[in-house]
Length: 297
Image (cartoon, rainbow, N blue to C red; front, side):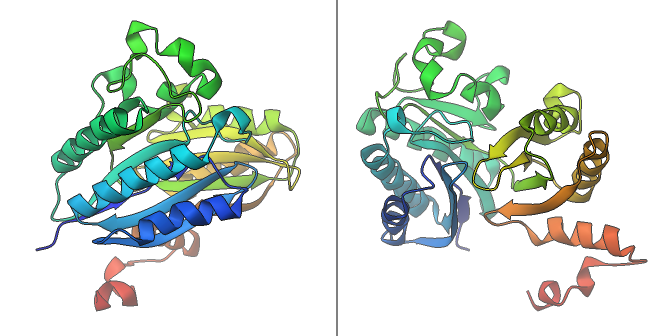
C-alpha cells in the first residue's frame, strides 16, 4: 500500500499574490506530491498550503518550499496580525494512510536537519517531535516572534534543535514537527475592539484554563475593521467545533457582542463538520454511515 503523509506549511506572505503563486508552483512541480489547497489572508499576511504525498516526495516539496520562502520573504519588511517567527513559519506532518506518527517524527527530524544545514534556517522541533515538554506547544516556541527571536535563542532553554543559537537574518526560524489532524477555525465578532477577542481567546484556550485541545488568540482584521478569535482545534473529536462556537457566543454576549461568522482555513476532516451538523440539527440515532460520501468511500 502507498504511504500518504499530509503536510500543511504556513508561510508569512498573504498579500503579494505573485509571491504566493510562485511558492505554490514549487509544490506543483514535485513528483509524488499533490497540492490539495492553498489560501491566503491579507490581514494575517499569511498563507496556508495543504499537500499530500509519499514520504520522499513530501520531504522534497517541503524543503523546496522552505528554500523559496527564504528567497522571497523578508521578515524585516513583514507586518501582519498573525504571530510569526519565520518566512516559512511552521511545517507540520500528519500521518494519513499506512504511516505511523513515529515515521512522521523521523521525517520531521530529517527535514529539520536538512533545512538548517542547507538553507541556514535554524529549526525547532515541536508537537510529537518536540525534544522537551516545553517545546511541544508552537505558541510557546513562537513567543517573542521574529523581532525577539535573536535574543530568545541565546537562552539555553530555547536553543534551536538544529542550526545553532542564531536566526536567519531575513527568514528567521522555523518549527517542524509531527502532529494529529487539526482544524484551523476562526470566529469573527461584531466589534472592532481587539480587547474583546483577546479576553474570549484567553477564556477558551487550554493553556489559560479553558477547553482542552484548544489554542486561541485575538486578532484584528484591519480590512474589515472587526476583531477575530483565531483558533486551532487540536483534537476536534474530544473538543468539537460546536462547543467552541457556543462558548465564544456566550462569552461575547457579556460584552454586548455577537458572532457575525466563522471560517475554516485550509482543509478540515469531514468528521469535524458532521459532529457540528449532528449537534445543531439535533439528529436522533444518527450514524456517520448515513453520510453518502462515507458509504461511497
